[in-house]
Image 1 (cartoon, helix red, strand yellow):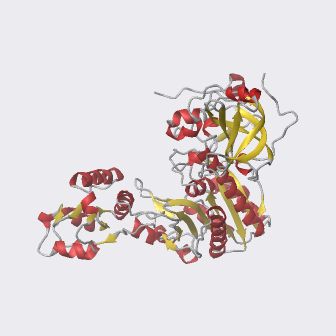
Image 2 (cartoon, helix red, strand yellow):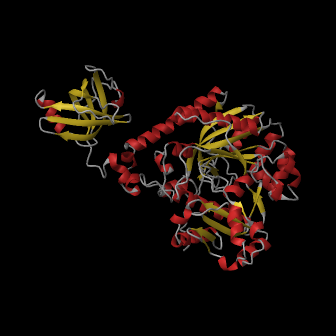
Image 3 (cartoon, one colour):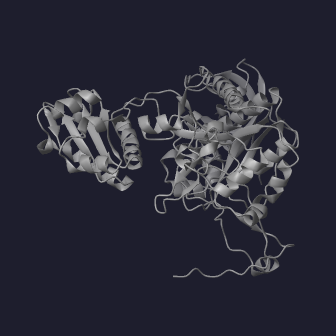
Length: 591
């Protein structure tokens, strides 16, 4: 029969016991490792704070010693004993100078043989770890990540509370409104045939809170989006969601910067200098080929259209004649690493993005140019001079429509930067401002909204809403950290007439506006203060701070790529009776 805790309660966590010899402690946790060396036996006890060595001696208490011999890895233990110095010091542990001379041992729960060794679960395949996630979460590395995430949330809350923000919960079941991704729908039993949607964000509700006069709102909000997953995306995630009244863009950026500075100081003891750098969307795309550039290394994209426009090379000529451009990046020192075979891999990658290929100049002993036969006298030297290439460098060139060129070179830049070890350690924040208000659909050529329909255009761009959508920029901004988008935000439209014009410019009829947003349009009729806000991805922020490669490492119970959770095997079928109550009938998908 297993022991109980009756009469004893934990006095200390394992890594927080007093260091003074003779102190009596009661500690609890999991048996991490058992070492039996004859008449001596040691158990490493593990809890969320770390390890503590428990010591047993056959000569001093035979009954406790024999009980300790029955302990297996992952058994749940309670031990009462006295602190004493360790004979074999372990400098790697906070408790490496001491151990507990155990006077009483209780086995509170016995573990069967686990499917993998908990402290070595990093070497186990993901599918097995996720099936037994509750075991993997005992791993000290994952526990540290989850605890760090908790600390991040606390710092964030404390910061915004001190700046007069109110934490207000918004509904988890709401009306389905178009916000850019598929909704997760919840059927209503009492309203047959009607559905709630899980919130993609609290966007509409937080704007209504501004109209209601709450002026500074904060919420660590759960959000849901039915999108394809990747390493930095889960179907459900947590957003540091905020909204402010009587402000403009500058006020929101400054408030967010204060949070970033406070957070990195308290969690990592790193000083983040303010203000954070800023770059317009147009500059980010032209220099880095990305709206979330990793600025920890240089290798900027250079426009060499004017330099090569007279070269009789059909790839270049065709791009220029069709309104595109010819651009290049220089991989400093890349000629040695990138052999012809390696360059071919980059070319295939570029084609996968949508480019027709890549031209290159590999300058090892002598410049080797893939389009040499099309060059006239002095052309090669002019190109090398224009891009600042030197012996040992690799020049990669793309010619096509601007969108294709920038996206291609932006992706190739990241590959080369990592391969050549150019990415520096540290945390590079960057604000991306003046986002485009519309984006053009590649297939239809139509202009569609790049943001939710409440985003405010820059005042000087309003006149182009109908006549020239390409010129319209938004009062919208993103916060980027080391090439990862942490947040997006904007000022909101508060003028009912402008809001109606915005809906119309998106092709919505009066009936559609009323059906989807009628309650919000009505609210604005009763006056709204100017307001704006943003949402910062708590999961992504925790992932970067913890140095993790995936959101799975900072989320307690994550989903895998097909949006299922392996541990509980969800999603799963439900009883027919439940479906009947919801007036739902499932239909097999067509072959």
